[in-house]
Image (tube, rainbow, N blue to C red; front, side):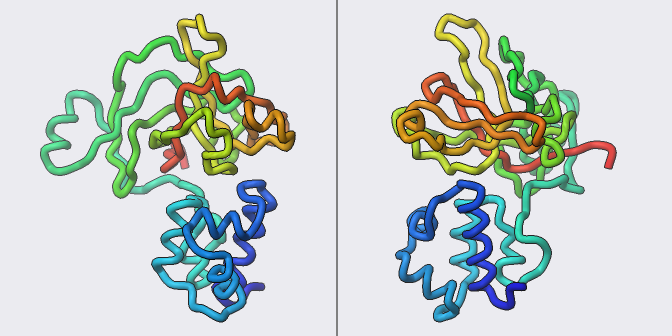
Length: 246
């Protein structure tokens, strides 16, 4: 059992390597903007792990539970969860709620599928409702269909997502290992796009990794599959999950 922050940081980095989110300690140091020697000193207890340093890790790797890292409280991973103070409103209530200072996040009607086939999205009819989610910075809320991302994101849940800017000509530029909402255009002439919820990983084949990412499911009954990077329209990072009936 880890007795200090350096040991807990060592465990978290090992988890990231195991999940193929990073490959080395040096990559971790580069991602959070420090020298490998500085990181090594923290792991070995030669330097203190500060709140500022912890926040830098959290901003790059959203799965980290900072309370666990700094003080050993709770679990190591802090995946987005149901927020007790969420509020859903519809168009008639939108103006009055905005007037008292609540930031509203629109929910779209077309679901993203947590399966291997994707879910066709033919058009955007605008928001069907709005969510007030305290302290959540998101662009939209999307419904989830299918069970391939269960139990993390079960069917019927809603995900608050934030657009991630990425360059398809830079295949290694995204934070691998995170779960994304993904929109893909299967063929150039198609009049629809397909939405997925998947954990994206770097392809293990060096040549194919330049053109494909691996889409991974939480549910072990679903196999990994390749997604052509050139077909991806947009990526969104998961900022929160809203579940019902619990």
